[in-house]
Length: 328
Ligand code: PBG
Image (tube, rainbow, N blue to C red; front, side, top):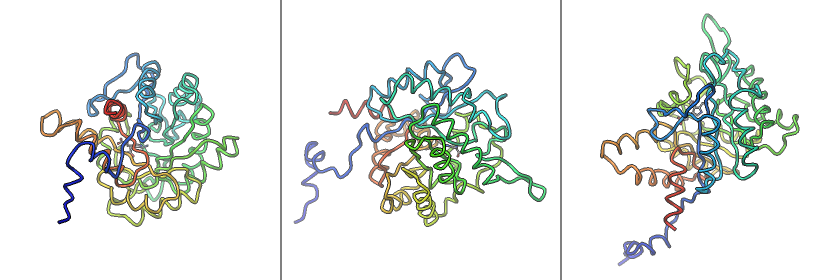
């Protein structure tokens, strides 16, 4: 009789025959840095995650490097008074995100891959990922006017020291526009991780607290409809054609089918983002004693790898990396 259980009999046999691995090098840590705070500020809906000061950010990146995490993804939280309709603090070299990138690059050089979130929503007073235009008595997010600002923002991030910029606003043509701006500015070696298939998801809830989002309404005119699979393949294909060095699927766990298909088709590395709501749900159920938090986090990230992710963005990156190292 064919007995699959044979290969499950001992821990070493299981390790030997595992089809998928999770290693620290697969992990990317998203981080928040806020302007105008003196102490790191906890984010109540994301246990263990904080808005950093410049100094606490440097210390936390050092811990990530120490744990073997190769990449951090930085989000800036400006003072509320620094937000405007255009999101101009995002390309100001003195804006919080660009100052943090410059500081980290000075401190760490090439010892960690510095990635920057290239999107306006943290910096606009209306909270949208692009600039608004009046249309028939309402407002719409103006795609091509937004690209002008993305170009400025990506250039400022590269100049500040980002190794990778990551457009997450889901504007059409954003990768091509940013590639062109980077090349024209002499930053031909700065890579682009494109949020290619980013869905209009309810799982971003805690993130909105994390960045002090001003958004009212939703992002359904630019982020993808959760109903659509084929459209995600089109988005990824367009981004690769426009010059993306990585593509991304986001959220992860509710979109593992999309991730698998993008991974099968992609000629470039594929990342997946275990978003704030995914992490928060696991922590919350863990706090109640309903599930084993640590085991559930490890299992969920392994499942994201199994579905085809080369890199996984997760708020648990450092603790997972530490545990993986301890396992060896
Ligand atoms: C937008 C952005 C969002 C996230 C990353 N970039 C929020 C949104 O689209 O509303 C969410 C990340 C998370 O939930 O962890 N720039």
